[in-house]
Each structure stands twice: as C-alpha cells, then as structure tokens.
Image (cartoon, rainbow, N blue to C red; front, side, top):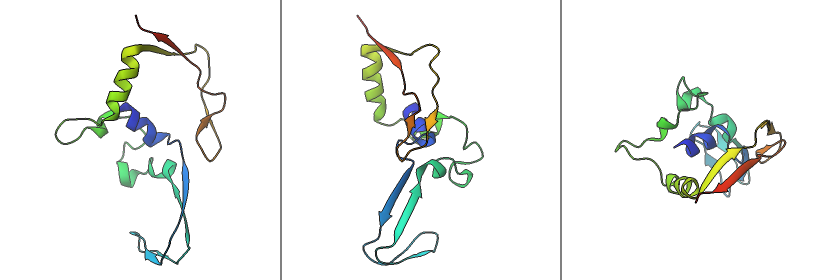
Amino acid sequence: MALCESLRLYPPLPLQQKASVQPDILPSGHRLARNGKLIMSFSSVGRMESVWGKDCLQFKPERWILPDGHGIQMKMVAAAILYGYKVRLVEGHKVSPRDFILLHAKEGLKALLCKRI
C-alpha cells in the first residue's frame, strides 16, 4: 500500500503521450481527431482533489485498502526484499526530484542493503 501511494504521488513516468487511431470523445466531452495527440500528466492526476479527495497531497497508504480489507499484490515483492535485506538510506544524502520525462532523483537514491543473516 505504501508502494502504491508512493507511485501515486511520485510516478516514475510523470507524463505520457498517446495518439488516437480513430476519432474519439474523451470522458470530459472533448473530441479527439484521428491521430490526435493526448498528453496525460500522471503527476497532476495523482494530486487532484477531484480524484483523491481533500487529503490528496497527504501520504496515506491506507487509501489502497480494498473493501474486503486486503491490500495489493506488490506487498509480496516489498515483503520479500525486506525479509532478505535491511534497507537504509545513506545518512545525509538529500533526495529531490529532477525535471525529466522520467522521474529521477537529482543525485540518485543512495541506499544501503545489508543481507539479513
């Protein structure tokens, strides 16, 4: 759930472009011509109050809990990594985003992985 919430606020691909193969009408009512270009901003949608509510800028992993009380499958990947390794950020390393088509940290994300015994 924390992974999903992180990807909502900081998607690895903040912008994506699509082209229509035939004329279409978007859910907003806007018309898109054949071969029309559409640029989607996942960074913006992930922070829209109309989509996520008044707390859209808050980090709330619990928003990903399904109605039956279960989370999402990615928890298995995170659990496998955390079971096998201790993960810590390098002390004093500043993490900030860099403007680019893909979301990157300006100075990278320095972490220490120590195999659990």
